[in-house]
Length: 340
Image (cartoon, rainbow, N blue to C red; front, top):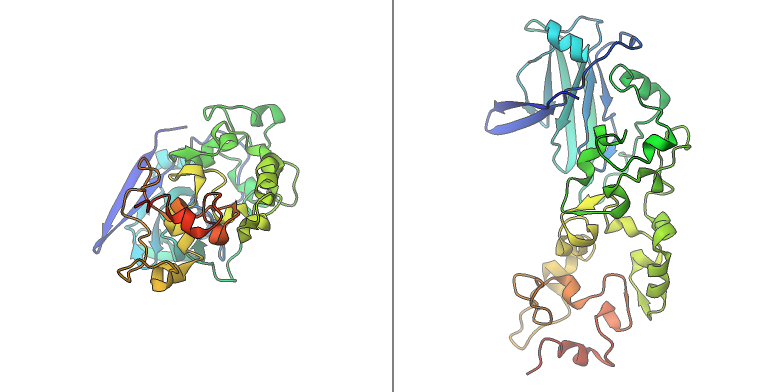
């Protein structure tokens, strides 16, 4: 794999950054010539992470350069006709585009010299920790036979063996070439960290390979059933936990927050419990103000910051409102911090 080369385009008052992924093109099966198309992400795709932007220029018509526009921010023409470029990439442009969370309108234009000769469009949605995606967006799998066929010029190992998929090193694991950035975070889920991708992803799924059993996380219990059994011993279970929607809160690959929480703790909680942030928290002090949610040291554990999980168990508890502790009343619970 060649070194990554960063192309930066300063446009208007905003910096649009792409990382060009240098994939060495080796002699292989010829890829059929097609009109300009966005291979991925497809129109209407719901994205879990920004991922790759892969464009095939084709030769009907012949295209010398491409521009990328995301939500009105447009790049300069990216040249793709130089002989050295064509030896490496043929007619493909492979980028790491930084989509903002939410909806993105993508326009790719093809140029012959300075004359626009082709255009392709897609509208995608990058999932955020703070909202529910519109219904028109859906998860569109990439590993379909027809899509993989477009990539065989570079990727000769799109049918890895079980032994190859068991490699623990990113240097030799076939998934790491494209998906290594998924675990470029502080806290990595154990199987993902050693590239045990097939612990969750099914190599035999059809029509798309590497599907997961469900999109909500019930399959997490294949490894974490003991935790779930412990939660069920409590009087109260948090709704998403009871219905096994682990992925509502946890990222299956990695996160910058402990326990692979999607985003910061309070941001994850307030995504559903928005009335707390808007001023309807049930707890008020003698001053009449709301109980603080953050910004202070946690009195019950000074090594940790104050957040929603300082008071509330995120999975299950015996006290009302999933309050932490084993006391007989909420007043006993409050004395964990307010002991004067």
